[in-house]
Image (tube, rainbow, N blue to C red; front, side, top):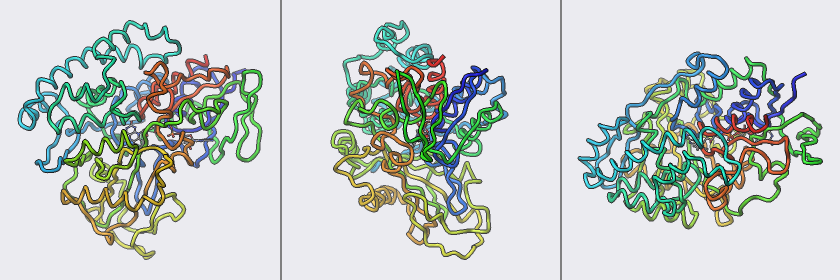
Length: 507
Ligand SMILES: Cc1cc2nc3c(=O)[nH]c(=O)nc-3n(C[C@H](O)[C@H](O)[C@H](O)COP(=O)(O)OP(=O)(O)OC[C@H]3O[C@@H](n4cnc5c(N)ncnc54)[C@H](O)[C@@H]3O)c2cc1C
């Protein structure tokens, strides 16, 4: 008889784990608190719009493909990606708008025009990363690191050799680049992993490297198509799902999980458990590794009765005072007075995200952070030419005693709209069909994230100063973890790998 495995949570990490576990012969049941799979990447429906709730920069698509291939399937039967010609549009205050091309030679030509003083630094960094990236494939992406002696992995040692391990990320950026344009662009990358530029995180350079080297893609059907495809494969393989059921406690006895207690007060037992929830909010590790959490996001989605012009799929708005913005964020843990704003213009590539031309209904009233728009209840005829769906993402501190997210939200939204308006990207209140806000409070309450952060404890408390915690509980033998708070870390491709690591460690 197969052994039974329960996975708590059907985020991208839990979905990936469910597939690998099934392929390894486990009987798998996924228990998910919400009514649908996908976690932070799951589709949200508002007023006829279909929203991607946050993730938008899709890189390393081969890591998704590997999962379908492991199951003997053709990935293209499940998920298709459109490569984007432009990595990002950038509006740097006081300078002309630029489009960063998704091609190395075109990037270099652009640099020659807009920041010639940085071309040599860019070339040096790029050639270093070309040597270093395969070493990451062989080490960090291939297995979790459990023991300090794993640091002696030849690939990892060679990677460290390419960067000065005693310098923080900001110092390295400042060594490579002198222009405000490149510094402001590069300073943000550690935050993709929830870290600041004070961390010793040369791995953050890999994100722009992968963007140029492998491209940035848009999944056909939106980012929400990724977890949907994983869910479909899991169901086909025979994974069972139970939705609308939260786990409120993991009960342990004699170094093993004895039972899971549901929010309906049932006791469920299994041979092993993988939790897709942060170890410090659910489970035996009652003590968080740190008081300080990794960074989070503040988002504002707008469905508009208006076409917004001037945006590319990814657009970045950088104030002249970007250094102050990063200081407020990274050092003071404040929402910056003048935030660096990322905007995703969803509807150009994803027209199905817009309401169909008729039967327009008012927004769902119960959704957290949702403010009803100005439309009345009367169904209105719309056309795709008259509507937009855009969303802004701002790197933000997690829950902090000095921030009341709910009270501050109107002010933060105004700050975002102000930055856009400086570049003539604006809309009136009357144009808003709905506005949907996500703050760290939502990630804490709904997803069980440690203090509303996306990636667990902050950089000071990484294992041996480098890695997020390992994917198996240090004391409870049949309990493993997947998701953004554990190895290999942040973002959809990494949490996909974390599902594999969790299953490998349970084996
Ligand atoms: C605004 C924003 C922008 C982002 N941008 C990008 C990007 O551009 N590119 C990228 O790659 N990544 C991006 N990310 C990160 C990416 O979305 C996450 O890393 C990833 O979705 C997290 O997946 P996960 O499986 O770790 O957790 P989650 O998605 O949080 O899933 C956890 C699941 O567990 C369930 N759960 C929680 N508690 C319980 C419980 N007690 N019982 C049962 N179930 C429970 C939750 O309901 C949820 O379904 C972004 C994230 C956000 C929020």
